Amino acid sequence: MNFLRSLFGLDESPENRTVLGNNVRVDEKEVAYIRNSNKRLTILFNLYNRYQETPHATKIQRVYEKTKNIHTYLIARKRAHALELFHVQHTDHFINTFTVIIDVYQSHQPAPVAPTYPPVRPPVLDEQVKTEINGRGQVVDNRRPQPVVKPISVPRPLPYPETAGNKIARLALTEIWLNASARIIYDKINTANGVLVKEISFTATKQEQDNFLLFVSNRLNIRDISYVGNAMVQVPSNGANGTGIVPILYWQGFTYALNLKDNCLFPVRVNR
Amino acid sequence: MADAADKIEANQKRILSPEQDALLDMYINSLDTYFEEIKNSEKVQVEVETLHLKRILSK
Image 1 (cartoon, rainbow over the protein chains, first blue to last red):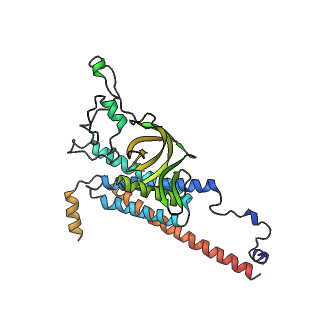
Image 2 (spheres, helix red, strand yellow):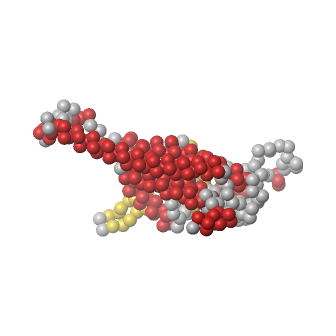
Image 3 (spheres, chains in turn orange, blue):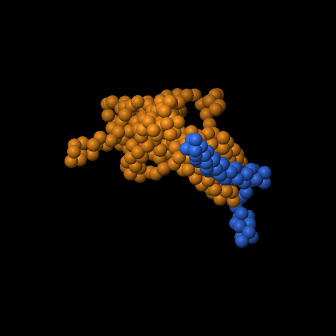
């Protein structure tokens, strides 16, 4: 060993070397970079979908494909930091510009049949919103936005008095805070050697996260989701105590809290 | 071939101005350039390392 070290000129300071993956904090950062990169790819793909009806779609698709190639290449070489840098210098600007272009274009269209919104609206009913809108137990289908509601930017003066029977429900996105240390046991498998407990946490390895995503994908029958972290939230449910740690997922351009008990997704905004 | 493509384009609505379209082309090119650069930088790194080892061994 000493011979080898002298050969490579390392005999004087072997402790100066940094071993990849040895430092937990670096590892966490890399996981976050990869996750961010996945999100950007999803956004790019959604952008391509929005351009689908235009002659520019193929070019946007090429941008998506090429970005994905770079993503795959750099991740395979464990260069997540370079990947993040690339996105900051390229992808983010591209997404901004071409989102604005299509936004402006669509806002000038004379209200086409079913305007093509980016698919960020939750296809799963948000129980909280549902009960707020309607406390009488009627089912409100909010899967498809009703004829565009005007933004509540001019709240007064109201044309009619705000009486008890005439209240306006306010839709709100719940803000959540990620908990980096919390662990969630999402599955228990009985094996010959005892019970195998499956956990997910912010610091889980790539493999553990993949296992979890596979589990969720199968259960909810949705694809292309990524894991964001865990958060303590109060889940609206029939049970007495709905407070607990739930996993936060990223899907189709938006973040959701997942209630593992009844497989409900709640749109949330992640506070960083 | 090009005619057919033009016909398809004529049926769809162009959103991008010629300038924005050119920008899109430029962006695609810059992605290619970037990819080439990172591949090359890796090659250079391999060469440098090889040279380094060579130098040490020939001392």
